[in-house]
Amino acid sequence: SACGRGTGHRHALPLSEMTAGAAAAATARLARELDCRCLATKSLFSHTVQRHFDFDSEGAFKREHRQLLDSLDVETRESLLAELRAERERREGLATDAAAREARIVGEYKRLHPEIFAPDPQWLDPRLVALSARAMEDPEAFARAARGGDLAPDLEVVHGVALVFDLPVFSAAFVRRFRAEIAHFEATGLPRGRPNSMNRHGILVNELGFRPFLDALLSDHVSPIAAALFPEAGGASLESHRSFVVQYALGQDEGLAAHYDNAEVTLNVSVSEEADFEEGDTLSQNRHVHSSVRACK
Image (cartoon, rainbow, N blue to C red; front, side, top):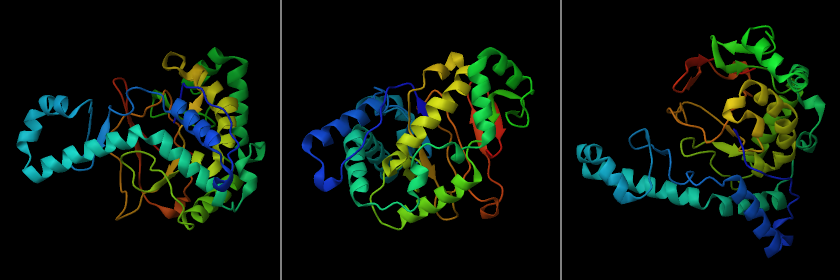
């Protein structure tokens, strides 16, 4: 996901060398990235009842959802309230907690494929590079061609919905190394932040050190395409991103409830081997769209 807030590159120090000033700077940067007054209180997901809620205060929540709360047994009602309180507290502490995790990872994690952490054209699909160059050259012509199907098969409107597109992103060489890097990190047991309130199995890849690579992907390729395709939605003002991987498996996370991304533009990229799964789909919905979206290339 990408959103319109400022951010910058950072070279973090190992935990043992990180000064109080450096730690404070890291926390401040992360706070800027998460600077959305609604983030801590809007669209909190409850596993107890499989729904999203706003939670400005417990009193307001009880008044607004009195009928729902009255329909629940005491144990379920208390579980719901405790879950929402905990999620709001987690979100309010995101910046501080993320900075601490990132500092520890920088100090302790030995990368398996250090070459993929830096921007390099070889890690991108050449078709993405060509698409972004064309979008920068003439955004209006690019948007017309995209919505008219003239850029297929490199960029396609999904199921006739002009707000959802399918396009290539990474090279096969990058995906192989990236998958191995994620597995390597998972085996270390180092702390990781949850991607969101719904997924229990995933990694925030910015904390792992992919921020410079993804900053470049956003500014050089995603932003030009988004600016051409979604100018009315803030596509031209993308300045930061919250990037993560999630894993779905039987007995773990098996699906994702309907939700709103806290972003102007969402980019979903499948990095799974096709042999690793069967079926599976992504559904995009808003007041204008109700479309089944096939897995991204």
